[in-house]
Amino acid sequence: MKKSRAHFPRIKPIAYEGPGSANPLAFRHYDPDEKIDGQTMSAHLRFSIAYWHSFRGMGADPFGPGTIQRPWEKGPDPVSIAQVRMDAAFEFFAKIRAPFWCFHDRDIAPEGRSLAESNRHLDRIVAHAKDLQRATGVKLLWGTANLFSSPRYMCGAATNPDAHVFAYAAAQVKKALDVTKQLGGQNYVFWGGREGYETLLNTNLKREQDHLAAFLHMAVDYAKSIGFTGQFLIEPKPKEPTKHQYDFDVASGVAFLRTYGLEKHFKFNIETNHATLAGHTFNHEIEVAAAQGMLGSIDANSGDLLLGWDTDQFNTDVKELTLAMTSILRAGGLGRGGFNFDAKLRRPSIDPEDLFLAHIGGMDAYALAFRLARRILAEGKFEDFVAARYASYDSGFGRDIEKRRVGFRELNKLVLGKLGEPKPRSGKQEFLENLLNAYLH
Ligand code: XUL
Ligand code: CO
Image 1 (tube, helix red, strand yellow):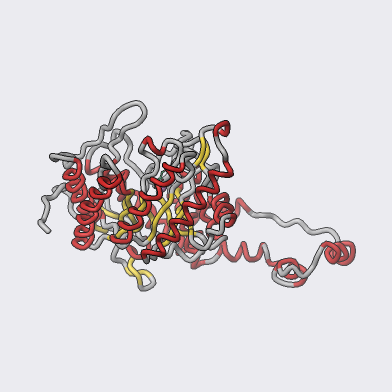
Image 2 (tube, rainbow, N blue to C red; image 1 turned 135 degrees about the vertical axis):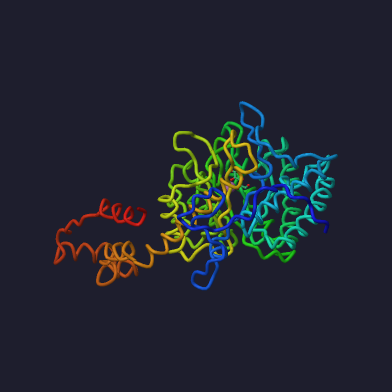
């Protein structure tokens, strides 16, 4: 493979300089090579770069076009541009020292005039990606298909009222699974961008949900038939672009998967800004997935609580991330998932350098949260408090309740007899909030 010229010539691979560093182009908390419990920090955190935001997002919004400057965006035809863009992307992945990347099919290769032509474009770019993965050591965390941008998907893909569109989406996902496998993808994500409705006046909700389930079963069957062993992930989001999306949040996702017998094949890819759009905290969504053994991966970003849409900002809120990381580590980590920066620069952040500064901030905040969460769990103060709070279920009639060995009659007898009135105990919320703050400051 010929060596391409540098697209970020003034930026060297980002080094770890420690918390005292004032260098904006250095890590203060993320030391990729540091060994923790026999594993590098890079292997613990499994950071990933989202191709769509970092290499396709140009800052366009409903009020104006893109502003962001990307000097490599030129060439004789869209496939050549896609190739050069990918050189720039892998140079960035290596310099920011992220071990993984993620993409949608249409992020990396332009859509053609037919599905066959789109597939040919994809094949050319995937061959290039394979070379670049080999040359840099960067791996694919997950692949996915864009089933939401094309006008053909305006009324959904798997939930489209027209079976022809369903069939087209199936063919597109078949190809996306093929190329994700070719690139060694460790997961495959389903985000139901337009799998929902704008109005119930024109919608058969039950049929649409049945169709979505049929689609996911077909994906499971196809993956098995080609020997794709990556983990399937559902990424819940309540709304935007549609008024209501069926994979609203983790709880509705769990109900959907169990209803249709899909629960063994899927875990969740939880995105911070999607959690808050659903009226939950990031940590709530992690806990709901962890309680089901279905915590898969994270789309790392944050929203703006004063705005009602998905702003996909880089998350530098150490408190929010420490709570999240504590729950993730307590649940045993993300396994083959990772932390994918599904986050974009603000529209006026137009320099290529801003891409580095944004990711450094996000990676450092997660790395600091990781260090703090490890300390919190090692000291066990919250674990001990919570264990003590539920201790009445560890023995006696409490244990019988958990084991379902007693019913209303037995409990009624106990309360009327020796138990009498329960003694209230403080929930100690403020004590615990102060305890958390002592770790953060
Ligand atoms: C959209 C979003 C997607 C998914 C992948 O809000 O998060 O980019 O992560 O389709
Ligand atoms: Co996402």
